[in-house]
Structure formats: structure tokens, C-alpha cells
Image (cartoon, rainbow, N blue to C red):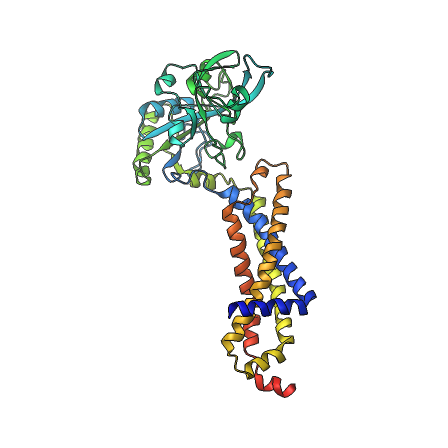
Length: 434
């Protein structure tokens, strides 16, 4: 019966080509606009590490001076080097990593490549198992390399392809800022977006090409990237020094389970008490422990204009659906005589309703296919914009399924009222008018 109603719908389209075209275009425009913005929002607001985002926490304490303190205000977004290194040594979590962004000049050896600059990350050994980084070759460095300022490096697969043509480069050397480092690992495809673990070096885009022990980068005075905020004494001769009153280091911990967060927060409170007793901290305890998604929400990673565009597109889709409802009503009411004859010949109200709903769904299917093409064009336009998330605007399998689901729901909603109106046509009145 459904196949028969589908054939009737196609026959009806041929009789009312202009009206059908208007309905298809209305749905296509609504679907195209909404799926373009919804896909961008989905990419930007997604969970970058879903398998453990509820067990990874950003750690903040408040080392700032009492001057200007206001109760309830947020602490600095990063840690001082002193606090980060002390928390790292105490190892109170399952895993912990301190880090900052940087930049190095790479000098290819035995190659026609000229020296070039690339992004780097200075961190500690737990970084790799904590963030589940995949390895193509080798592994991360050992904890002894953190303590001993090891001349070791982990490189990205992109850099490995550029320097070693994709071969296993573990054990080979790379020169960074004139210093020789031994490659101990090559990362696989790892590009978490948003760039949650360090939002100061770019919220979206590719990960770094070189990873070095933090202690090594500090000893060799490698350049750093990102934000730094100094307080108290403003004449810091070395703002990255071990006792400098400057916050510039990101610190993350992995706990066994989310339930341990309360215990770790108490540990941070006790740590703050100790530092206040030692004369370093002046403010009342002010610690923060946020998991990945809480951290991204706190930092408002999704741009405000993207949220606005999403609401506008959904509003536009609603307008398109209202127009489609009006067009379907006009179409079905013009066929009141035909519907009355069918009712007189024995068709039930339910059959009329189902036929009308299938016709509306068929219009929605055609509009959805055209809307999918418009969405692809819209995403192509987004990728041409000069924003850091532009190249991420692609339609994946999940969003493709959502496109068809949204189309089906939208078309059925648009067809419900007209179908309900069609099933209420009185056959006697229509036969009399005929």
C-alpha cells in the first residue's frame, strides 16, 4: 500500500510541477542552511577525547597577590612554573603533565630542505599515555628523560614524512635550534579538536610537529608560545624562571575515575594551605578542577557568532516549514473532490491521512537531497573563510545521517496538519458539489 501511495505522490507531482518545485526548494533551503551551521557547531563543540574526557582535569590554583582580590573571582588560567613542577613531583594523580607551547627551528641534515620553523610542545612523559596519543613508530620518552633533561624528541607523522619519507625514524637525529635530539617516537594521526590541552596556541587546527621534555626546552632556552601573566613584582628578569611570579604553564591530570575529583580537589586545597603558610600564597584558597568538557565550556571555545548562526538557521528552517505547510494545504484542498470520491468508494480517514503524509514525505525527501547539495556548498564556503576552524567544516557520516533524519522529521511535521485537514474532507459535500 505504501508503494502505491508513493506512486500516487509521483503522479501528483507531475500534475502540479510548479507547486511541487516551490515546496522542494523551500525545504531544501531550510535543510541546507540548518545543516551547514549545525555541522560547523557539531565540529566545534565536539568532545575531543570522548573515551576519557570525564577523567581528564585541568588544574588551577591561585598564587596571585592579595592586592585587588575579590571573593569568588576565578584564579589565573595557568600555573606558575614553581607550582607545576611541585605538583608534578608529588604525583598525586594517576598521571599528570605540565606543558607549554613553543617554536623551534629545524635544520634538516643530509637533505636539500632548508631550515624551517615549526611548532613544538614542551611537556612531561605522562603527556602521551594520558592523552592516548597513537604511535606510528616507537613511544614517548621515559620519566628519567624529564629528570635528566634528555635530548630526545617525539615528532609527528607529517614531519616524519617530510624529513624521513615516512620511514621508521626511531633512533635517528634531528637538529633543533642547533641542538641534536634523538627521535624516540613518531605519532600517528592525532589531531584533537578543539585543541583542549592548550587553548593559548590555537583553539583549532593541527597539533604540534615536535614534542620535547619540558626540562630540556627550559635548559636550552627554546622559544615559547602562548600567554604569560606576571603579578606581584612586575620587574621579573626571567618570567619563566623557577620562582618567577608568572603563570604560563598548563597542567592536566588523569584520575582513575570521576569520583576521585573531590579527593584531588581536597589535595589542592591542602597544597594551597601549605603554600600560604610558606608565604607564597596570599589569597584564600581558590582552586579549580574542571574536566575536558567543563573546561571547554568555561573557556567558551565555540565562537559566539557560530551559536548565533545556528539559531538563525533553525529559525529560517522553521519559516521554510511554515511556507511548506501552506503550500501543502493549498495543494490538498484543491484535491478535495478527488479525496471525497475516494472516501465515497470506501477509503478510510486513516488511509487518506497516510497517503497525504507519504506525499509530504516524498516532497521532503526530494528537498532533503537538494538541501544536502546546498549544505555541501555551504560547508565549502565556510572552508574558504580565514578562520582557524575552517578546514574542519566537513560533513561526516554522523551528520549525513542527521541530514536525512532532519529532512524526514521536517517533512512529516510540515505534512501533518495538511494531512489532518485532508482526512476531514466530507465525501457527501464533495460529491454533491461535483
